[in-house]
Image 1 (tube, one colour):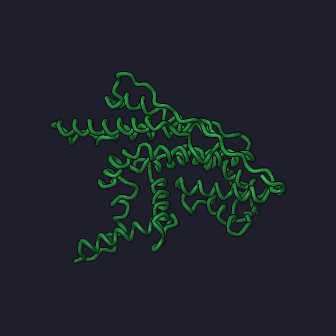
Image 2: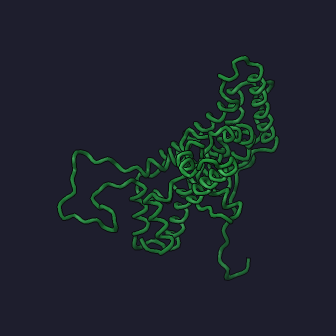
Image 3: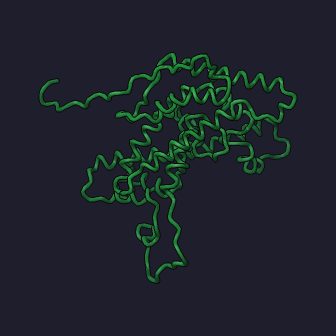
Length: 333
């Protein structure tokens, strides 16, 4: 390194790939418990293992990766065969539902654990959330690739069956008002597509945008959906981070008794200062209003927190998103 250029950042040291655990003569795809026991070490390594790199999740050995893909494929195949030979198959749950629900519960547990580890001091909260979320999201994206067969086999079918993030019942009322007698099937389909595009615009998509922008907008919309909607595993993880981690921090404490606003009290900056605020709102206010803070570091934290709120499905009308977006656009609170 030449003199005068300063010290360069040291490269992140990642954990070595996790090797394929010995399953002996046991068949990982024989049952849900067997499959989950085979998957869990990989999930914990990818999602939970401590790492000094928040942008890249720890990896597993190629043989373990292939073993998981094969075991998942075989498990789904066995379920499909069992359903096809069952006389009461219409009463059976779709194949893959049990594994999907296990993964959902897993992410809920991880998010709750992360919340329990949050510092009690509001001034340190955002410094904890940003790297915590980045590490969680990196792990979630790796698991999404690892278990992509679940997306292709189970999630895609659920969306085709109208159980995805946006269902016909969600948009029927709005579309029904626009349908006129004599409209063709193609015209009705076009109006349904217009309504879907309208929803995606709320997450940053515009007609003529890139395919990457469309994917990002749909991922945000999926993460914002109710818990009963079936979404890809990456969005499933982000949705759980919102419901189990962010929403408790965004929740506003309830007032005790019948407290009334004092006569003559005025709101400051459009908010009522005497009303309690959620922990995250207090932390954001302290971050943005602190006088001796590093401006660049404050912008970085504000930007990354705003991104975390958006991609986990916190809607753009939320006061905290508005506050962060205003600061990032104008530099003022």
